[in-house]
Image 1: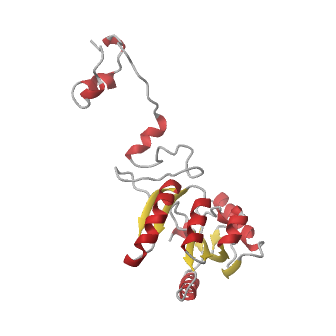
Image 2: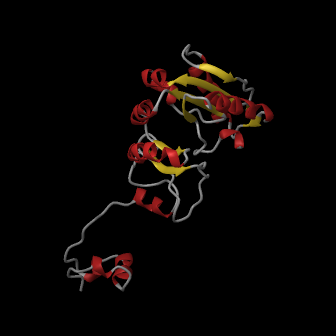
Image 3: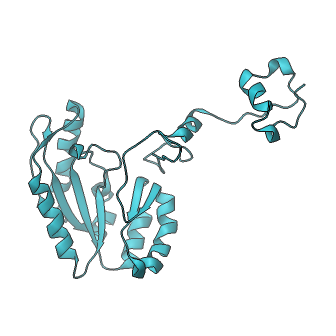
Length: 227
């Protein structure tokens, strides 16, 4: 959707090798074949996408599953596959390529999945695809993912951004330079604020905002001498 130009567009799928792995790869490989090339928003984004593909194409440890070539501002999908050992040895493989590009990372077991999760840089989102039998494994992964992503989901795909109270669109560096705030939603104002303590300030020095707050919304913040 949108030529992959959504900041929460999933870019890496970590899959435990097993009977379903080939079916997952085959279904993922078949889906882009039904999509025509789409137009990238700007020339600079299109150029960045064209420069991102060769990073994966040039690695022998990466296997191309779907390959298409971008021309001008049009972009077709690209899908690659590699192993967790290769990604950990070459972190450039895990860097975001903004556009319709995905990477399947194969792991042998949960321990390798945990190792990969610990080695990832900050992400906007992380999703656990699971059923009831996976709950003990998910409980081991969740504390790591909470430290790596601004949004953690189960059995779903992250939405785009809406400016509302429950929206978080940020995460640990490099997804944000301020790990304690989001770039969208009502909490985004925290990116532009810093705490200041005013003690025993005369009333005429107090800003209109603080006078308004003192009138009843958060009286617990005003226990000093503000008269």
